[in-house]
Image 1: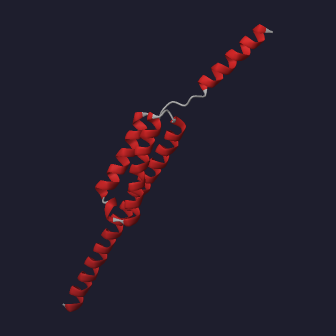
Image 2 (image 1 turned 90 degrees about the vertical axis):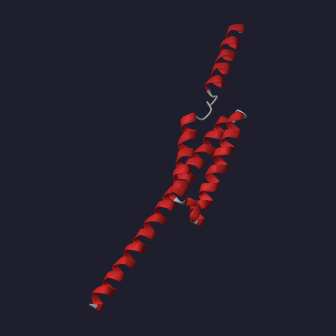
Image 3 (image 1 turned 60 degrees about the vertical axis):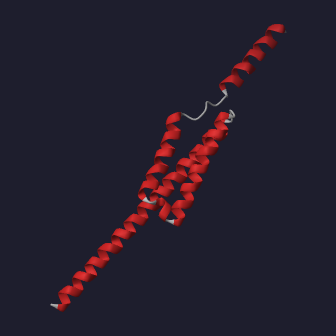
Length: 120
Protein backbone atom coordinates (compact mmCIF):
# COMPACT_ATOMS: atom_id res chain seq x y z
CA UNK A 1 0.00 0.00 0.00
CA UNK A 2 2.81 2.43 0.89
CA UNK A 3 4.47 1.68 -2.44
CA UNK A 4 1.27 2.42 -4.32
CA UNK A 5 0.82 5.72 -2.47
CA UNK A 6 4.44 6.66 -3.10
CA UNK A 7 4.13 5.93 -6.82
CA UNK A 8 0.85 7.84 -7.01
CA UNK A 9 2.30 10.82 -5.15
CA UNK A 10 5.36 10.84 -7.41
CA UNK A 11 3.11 10.75 -10.47
CA UNK A 12 0.99 13.65 -9.20
CA UNK A 13 4.06 15.79 -8.45
CA UNK A 14 5.63 15.00 -11.83
CA UNK A 15 2.40 15.81 -13.64
CA UNK A 16 1.98 19.09 -11.77
CA UNK A 17 5.54 20.13 -12.60
CA UNK A 18 5.07 19.26 -16.25
CA UNK A 19 1.93 21.40 -16.41
CA UNK A 20 3.73 24.63 -15.47
CA UNK A 21 3.81 26.92 -18.48
CA UNK A 22 7.09 28.70 -19.09
CA UNK A 23 6.99 32.49 -19.39
CA UNK A 24 6.65 34.02 -22.85
CA UNK A 25 9.93 34.05 -24.72
CA UNK A 26 11.84 37.28 -25.10
CA UNK A 27 11.60 37.04 -28.88
CA UNK A 28 7.79 36.93 -28.62
CA UNK A 29 7.88 40.22 -26.71
CA UNK A 30 10.35 41.63 -29.23
CA UNK A 31 8.13 40.63 -32.15
CA UNK A 32 5.12 42.41 -30.66
CA UNK A 33 7.17 45.51 -29.85
CA UNK A 34 8.78 45.54 -33.31
CA UNK A 35 5.38 45.30 -34.99
CA UNK A 36 4.02 48.13 -32.85
CA UNK A 37 7.08 50.24 -33.66
CA UNK A 38 6.66 49.54 -37.39
CA UNK A 39 3.04 50.66 -37.16
CA UNK A 40 4.15 53.86 -35.43
CA UNK A 41 6.79 54.57 -38.10
CA UNK A 42 4.19 54.04 -40.82
CA UNK A 43 1.88 56.60 -39.23
CA UNK A 44 -0.59 54.52 -37.22
CA UNK A 45 -0.95 57.44 -34.81
CA UNK A 46 -2.48 59.50 -37.63
CA UNK A 47 -5.41 57.12 -38.16
CA UNK A 48 -8.03 56.85 -35.40
CA UNK A 49 -8.59 53.09 -35.69
CA UNK A 50 -4.90 52.27 -36.10
CA UNK A 51 -3.99 54.52 -33.17
CA UNK A 52 -6.57 52.79 -30.95
CA UNK A 53 -5.18 49.33 -31.84
CA UNK A 54 -1.63 50.55 -31.36
CA UNK A 55 -2.50 51.92 -27.91
CA UNK A 56 -4.15 48.59 -27.01
CA UNK A 57 -1.11 46.66 -28.22
CA UNK A 58 1.25 48.70 -26.08
CA UNK A 59 -1.01 48.34 -23.03
CA UNK A 60 -1.23 44.58 -23.62
CA UNK A 61 2.56 44.29 -23.94
CA UNK A 62 2.94 46.05 -20.59
CA UNK A 63 0.27 43.81 -19.06
CA UNK A 64 2.01 40.70 -20.41
CA UNK A 65 5.28 41.82 -18.79
CA UNK A 66 3.51 42.37 -15.48
CA UNK A 67 1.74 39.01 -15.64
CA UNK A 68 4.96 37.19 -16.50
CA UNK A 69 6.76 38.85 -13.59
CA UNK A 70 3.98 37.58 -11.29
CA UNK A 71 4.42 34.04 -12.64
CA UNK A 72 1.05 34.10 -14.41
CA UNK A 73 2.59 32.67 -17.55
CA UNK A 74 -0.57 31.35 -19.24
CA UNK A 75 -2.23 34.73 -18.89
CA UNK A 76 0.95 36.49 -20.00
CA UNK A 77 1.11 34.38 -23.17
CA UNK A 78 -2.53 35.11 -23.99
CA UNK A 79 -2.07 38.83 -23.35
CA UNK A 80 1.04 38.87 -25.51
CA UNK A 81 -0.81 37.09 -28.32
CA UNK A 82 -3.51 39.77 -28.16
CA UNK A 83 -0.83 42.46 -28.17
CA UNK A 84 0.81 41.03 -31.27
CA UNK A 85 -2.56 40.72 -33.04
CA UNK A 86 -3.47 44.32 -32.19
CA UNK A 87 -0.04 45.55 -33.32
CA UNK A 88 -0.46 43.64 -36.61
CA UNK A 89 -3.90 45.20 -37.08
CA UNK A 90 -2.52 48.68 -36.36
CA UNK A 91 0.20 48.07 -38.95
CA UNK A 92 -2.33 46.85 -41.54
CA UNK A 93 -4.58 49.85 -40.92
CA UNK A 94 -1.61 52.21 -41.24
CA UNK A 95 -0.64 50.54 -44.52
CA UNK A 96 -4.19 50.95 -45.76
CA UNK A 97 -4.13 54.66 -44.89
CA UNK A 98 -0.86 55.10 -46.78
CA UNK A 99 -2.24 53.21 -49.78
CA UNK A 100 -5.43 55.28 -49.82
CA UNK A 101 -3.38 58.49 -49.72
CA UNK A 102 -1.27 57.30 -52.65
CA UNK A 103 -4.38 56.45 -54.64
CA UNK A 104 -5.83 59.89 -53.90
CA UNK A 105 -2.56 61.52 -55.02
CA UNK A 106 -2.52 59.46 -58.21
CA UNK A 107 -6.15 60.34 -58.94
CA UNK A 108 -5.41 64.04 -58.40
CA UNK A 109 -2.40 63.86 -60.73
CA UNK A 110 -4.47 62.06 -63.35
CA UNK A 111 -7.26 64.63 -63.12
CA UNK A 112 -4.71 67.44 -63.42
CA UNK A 113 -3.20 65.83 -66.50
CA UNK A 114 -6.66 65.45 -68.04
CA UNK A 115 -7.44 69.12 -67.41
CA UNK A 116 -4.16 70.19 -68.98
CA UNK A 117 -4.79 67.97 -71.99
CA UNK A 118 -8.29 69.36 -72.44
CA UNK A 119 -7.10 72.97 -72.30
CA UNK A 120 -4.53 72.51 -75.08
